[in-house]
Length: 251
Image (cartoon, rainbow, N blue to C red; front, side):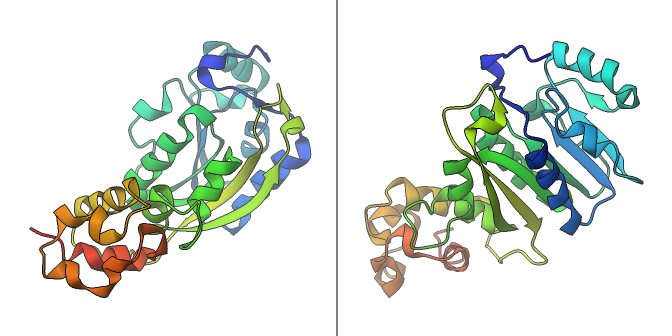
């Protein structure tokens, strides 16, 4: 069961206390439908299938793991989505929450899929590589604050929950891990359009050492660029600052 497939970024969680802490992090979430991303050997799955009164599904691409899961937990019959997570459509109608020990090689892509699905996402509990988790949760002024920080925090409240040592996994990864929780914001920060907002944030951070005036000069007219805020660098702006600037972009 613990055959490692490096191509899938597999590291199996073996620390039962960590598994229980991850599942316990769901308690502050409101949900009736739950999707697990990457069931693997069932470390989290075995606890999730015991949660009463929910509609549960899990995504797993590895044939060998699916055979093991169905043999070990027959209740998973018809609850496993046997596909690449990045290629599936929304697994439920209406609101749902997401949990998983995310494969690190696609964890940022998973995050952006959560942003894409944001109208229906209530809560996300995710294990990421520590550096990625820190970037997602970072606040303005931090060196780790960047594109993923701003785009995630525009739509979710982010909580950095706890860190996980390498020896909690089999085989141990070469990096430390951390678990974060995303909760849907009651109100999104207003932007002119999401495309404008995304373009502004990505352009600003792609040249983060420059002042905003030089980094995003092609997105604004000369008069707007005289505003004092353009003296700052991207990492100094709050999410709300980027959102407000989106309304001043060239049409």
